[in-house]
Length: 576
Image (cartoon, rainbow, N blue to C red):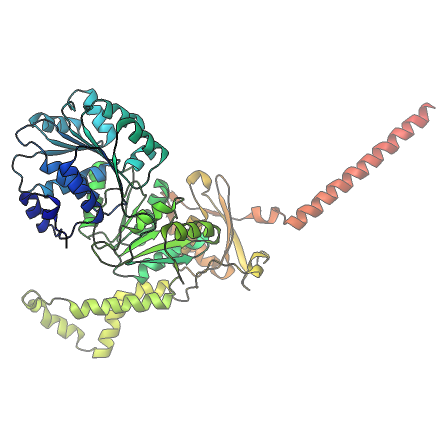
């Protein structure tokens, strides 16, 4: 088995990384470290997230720093604040036993003056985002004239985020004698352009191609209709009570909406997105790293730099357009030889995306049925029993209270006590999933063609509500409002039509009175909800009616035309 010492890594660094649990170098480390320790040529390394890139460029950079020289010798550029902080923390861990070395992370969202003070004290390695690095260069607080190593990490992501001009500005400020290292998951046109302009005779290393996804990741797919996606996500989370995972959404707004709903319904979840301050982002990240937060909801960009072990599930609430992004996401789980599950919540219209991911990623999705209420309740119940069975009992702490507790509960039999205990802890799931429907993606033809007021044999009644597209409401929000008001997800819901200021929808007639009563307790993003009668539906004709109406209009036009022609003929006869 190859060891880091055999790659040329010195004893101080080896000692630190052994304490971190690094035993066997990854493929990218085997290829990069010996080259960077012995060569001054440029390097282009194609490697996916989670392959050990930070140590691949970080260990040689630290080892070759002149600790007697207090000027910046290495500059590492990366796309996000989170990745910037993560890289700097990793390098600090590697250099634990290297005396005299100073590292600094520089990024936006924090006080630039603090970073300037640190630079003035002397720093050899700077890890920065392009924007803040450029600001410090313009202020002449950061000098790169003697920098001998420039590392571009996640180069494809930096360029896709629009940092090309910033990178050009920064690289122009560095010495032409520098060694440039470019680490990227893909070689896009922009990456090729950067490498052609600023690198020469570079060695290329390619590891972890897209068709070599981790073998210990299972890829599950749940096919549901678009309107049932959120409900499917909840059921997946409930079915896996020990889940420790990331939910990926397409946009910042989508991320916030899903997180707000999840938290409002009592899930141990939070989101990371661009509207948070740096302190808020750090706080959310730290809670997720120390597992006090169970589910993190994020976009791909926000999750950059999130290097966390033991993630059990990666859930694609929104499928990415690029198959490589799916592979990046799934690589967040099953690290350090462990197993993990990557889930796609998909609908019929995304078949091509799924086939493309399977083909280019070299994977096969396993079709899964969304868990039923009974299956979820069973899993949650046994989790509760396991928790009670394995709880640590502190006799000294509880002893003063036991006599009174025994007296208060002595009238209950063992069986009755267990029943009450389970019910107290478990009623939320039993109530929510009582008579819950099975979620599927296929809508039967008779459902599509069913007439208003008779869907699945149930009579529907209509309402209008005072939120619409202006309030950023979606059909999913309306379904959630109905479920929250009636405390059930098994209510039959008919048409949902959004206009700018209001929405028209139908629900099962049997729940009309309860819905009118309970809607007063529900709000939507701070807006009180007011119901009205949905005259909109009665006025809007079906396609066949619209056709009849057109026929009537055309008939009346022809009749008017004939009458007009007769009148003209009569007028002419008078003039004769």
